[in-house]
Length: 310
Image (cartoon, rainbow, N blue to C red; front, side, top):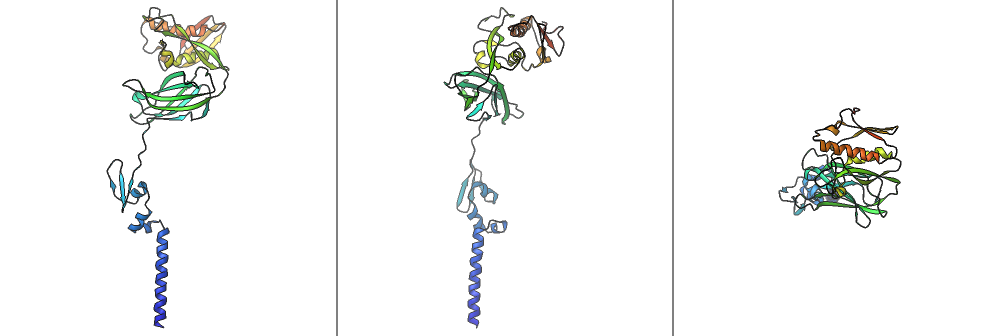
């Protein structure tokens, strides 16, 4: 009888031991993790190793040791420019929207739009909205561009090297141009090639821009004028005398009189009759290209008296 009891007890112990071992092999809860060997067995990456309290070596990249296993921290390469729009292969509209985050020198983010044959349609820049230096900050640009020769092309976003001007952190995105109906207008700027010594301040020169066909061409032309010369236009000598940040508050065209009403930034720290003459010429010539315009009135915050006087 005693032998039967002992045999039964031994079998029960063996059964319980097997069941316990099977349980430990499958469990991952905190109670199981009190067993060091079980913690080691269940650790398969650096994050698990750190989370389970194993020692971390202060190397670069960091290493964590769990028993006889060592896990190395994966370091994601820092990107100074991340583009979220457009996405690769996306069909882009007009104007073209470019968005993302960047950490660049003086927060300047350069971009190009290229045609299918890799020729440059447009080159310009925008500024990231940086609050803390060194951190990725959002940037945004919405630009018109010359009509492409094909249906495909590229958007390139990059930083210009402070040392030699070369492209840094270049992001190249293949895109497709959506067919759009547009109209061409002329924008007037000063030009250092045409007048290298600035002898004729009141003479400005045209450069073409595209705007949507349904847009009021006069208003659209003024909005393009406020954007200033694009990078490719700057290379041709075009420059503006209008302050950056000026906005168009209102525009009317009645009985041949075109009235453009601007924000106060238009008159901020203006100095010298040459610059004032250039600004007046830029606005006036841009509007007088349109049939029926006999007079141009320039206003600031609704007031035209004394505006743009030297």
